[in-house]
Amino acid sequence: MALAFYSITGQTRRFLAKTGLDAYEITDADPYHAMNAPYLLVVPTYDDEMLEPVIEFLGYQNNARDLQGVAGGGNRNFNELYIHNAKDIARGLDVPVAFDFEFNGTAADVAQFQKVVRQFESQKSRS
Image (cartoon, rainbow, N blue to C red):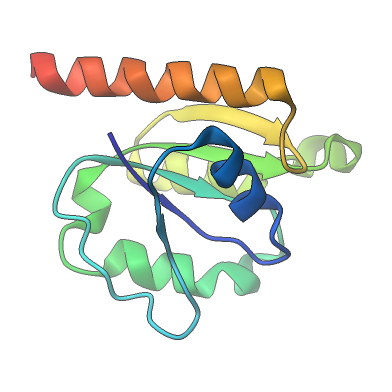
């Protein structure tokens, strides 16, 4: 399963690095990258305006259509705002919130995320 992510402070980038999975990093300088395959999106939680590159990425070519699910990173101290960006994207594009993790994730989060990615990959191969 392909992965794309956006990182502002580096927490999301550190989480993905710990998984050992290949992932495309959405950047502020050039958010226009076509995934050209089903993928999962991993986003941090910040003010909506700070995720403008992600919105541009999702609007590019077939990226919104190819999105299979969203994973969100955040801080549980934010209560109902915890992973709100992932929830908003998932709701807007009618895909599931596939996973959530706090800060840059624990070893258990990494293992569970790898399992989630394998499950999505398995579902894709049966389609």
